[in-house]
Image (cartoon, rainbow, N blue to C red):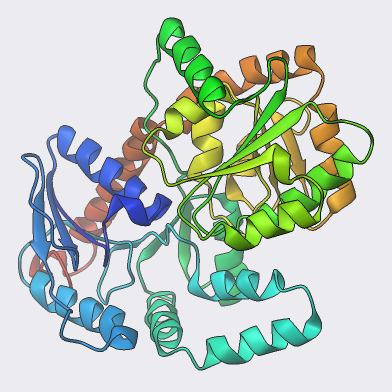
Length: 398
């Protein structure tokens, strides 16, 4: 089977969608599938993948995605690919997998997190003037018409958004997101836990909360600081929060100080030791305004770390509230989030939740995700070969 994957940017540092695509492509190739990745990112081809550059650097930034889509489609035409799998929307794809979420929903959630009606209106107007957003929305809208590709939604949350925005026209298949789950020796986990807690001066016995985010506002860090402050006002001080990620921490540090929790919070910046931070933490808190299916929560759960997240996160679908952690409706429900933080003081409860979370690992694996995607590929190929006039139809971009 020959599969082409189209994704404009594949730098893993950019975020979860890019990291997931790389993991997926490598595992797909490991099943004996011939995988070609088309991207505008300059990077060498690893031994198991063929990476082809689709250059857009001479194009004005707002138009680069549209140029990438057009050039990728032309590059793929007539090359006999059995499946064209688009992460970035491109014409003629067989499968469209919006790993970062639907464009329209991403915009709507970014507007929703603005605190006042005036700010929401301003954001809506500015977004409407954003050429890149408009271009992406147009590309995606054309793909989601009846007769377009199968939409491989990474969660039921995304599938519902497709139906709410586009009706019953698009064909949707939920293939729940996954992460690479590797067994970690207990001695290594303990060593990493001790190292991180010592490095960041976490007092013995303190509850350590962890948040991992590259977009602090979208992932609910301001809401988390508000909730932490509310919890601390009850007299609880035996708690610390570490926030990992590459966003600018200065406004968040100022907010923490203003709320009276500045000495309880540290922003550690981007790190390649995320797994070690999971092992050091007692609870992962991800009060996001929008996540199609957060890798952070899947990774934390698979390592046996209880999570607190929101119903705005597709990853919450795998959780049972009160069993694997807690799911609140909205990140700006400060009372609810503060209450769940306070409940996590119970060490026995955290232990039980951690055991339940670790038991989810097989459901959260990228290997399972790849298996289900290959099944979809085979279905689409079988449909194509049995359709009337199939012998005359080329494979690849049509």
